[in-house]
Length: 212
Image 1: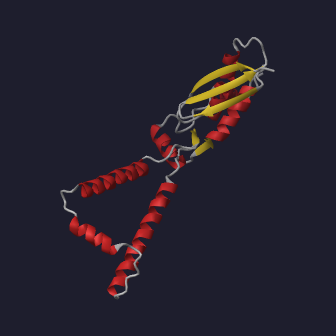
Image 2 (image 1 turned 45 degrees about the vertical axis):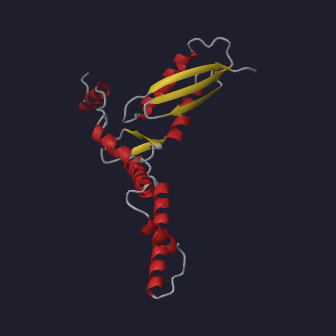
Image 3 (image 1 turned 120 degrees about the horizontal axis):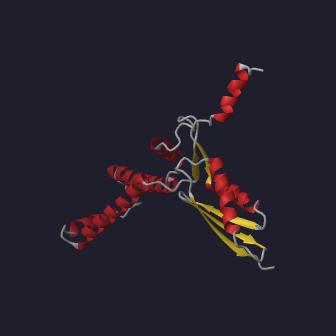
């Protein structure tokens, strides 16, 4: 009895493994996705913008009031004028102010160029134009449930970083030999199901006996 074309095609599909998703291991796609999920320095930028806006408004009000002959006195203009007249360029005060301004500028530039740590783990997508991710908190809970599914584990806490997954598990068993390897296997399988674009992180497991 000969097999039909559809049966042969189905058998070939089962025998041939599916191709890896597009973008898997692609550094360009990883950089793009990481940039999308990387949080910006919203709080420092907001504080700097507010400070500059307040200072500019005070200066503008003081200058406009001085042009009309009635300065509001919001800024110590006279004291600043006296300080400017009495201070020489070779004094220590200009060097200190310039050094502080340079340091503050470098700090702000560093914060602008290097944003905060990503709050999500980038996952591999079949479409390079589609960016997927899972929050590190959600991934930690997901992997903790995988660790707690191992027989003999009563509870587990997982910490996820870019390259490492740390599992701290508790067990009521007296003999916990080999339990760490079982937990590592369960957590690693769950990580492979998520398919992080940066690759499989190192899984480190610590097992403690729970004292009743």
